[in-house]
Image (cartoon, rainbow, N blue to C red):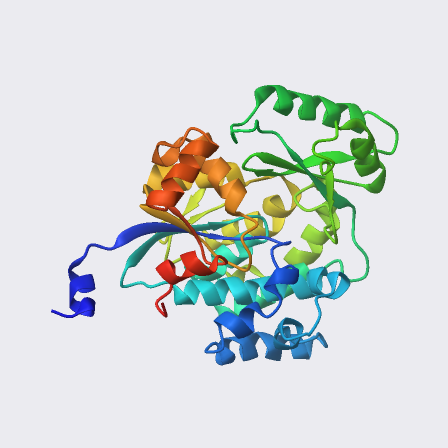
Length: 357
């Protein structure tokens, strides 16, 4: 019996697949498509044909630049399509002889990628939605974001820190001309969105942690906040409900809601994606908790590029005590013996997941 026959008799491992959001294609990821996806020329060309019509630089050219440019590679109109190409290419590479994909989700922009993974957007619809929403602030950002920890040193949510963040947000919003909102619940972190006045007050009031936090996120707008009202309206006008289809794989959104092939109302999916999802906090922590509790995956696969979502993923699982993890030490010990969290942006873990390994 050869290895393929042996593998065919093994039961498939159930996996939850998670797509990253903005900010995961950094200096080390330059060339990600060239290194890992030279066989995806047709898929990449499809994306670039759409971008060519919009007079935008091709993602193939962006990925093959000799030097990483913060301004060029992190701008919304470039980063969104580039990250989508990397993540979706990774998704295509998952070894489906070995893994059964039981559900998909994503962080922030990763929701759009999850729609593509599940088939709720076909390839034409996916690049149209992702590129359109990513390009909405090409002429100037609306507000911004910063990130701040709300966990202890063992990666457990800290209620004292959570209450302090909430009280400071309330205080800042009561000050003249200041707006500050929770944007993303990200494992052990809170991402806050606001106008410039609100963000500056946060930077002055939030206690400094490790000379790193509060950390402003470069080239990010005030995503998932009321400041995006115009973006939401423009998105709905540009992207019709007809683009959306019933998913082939269950999807978990930023409220922890499950969308299935049988229960999905595509009009409501369109409204959520371009309405509530744009304007209200994205609860990634809850999405992961639902994924772990409702689908009981044997493993969680995080798509690339990069591995910036690894920590927040582990923290989200710890928060729900999935895999018996109650703290950072539990996570590290498990990962060293029998990894439950596999990041395709990590070359060693990629080999475990990919059909090309």
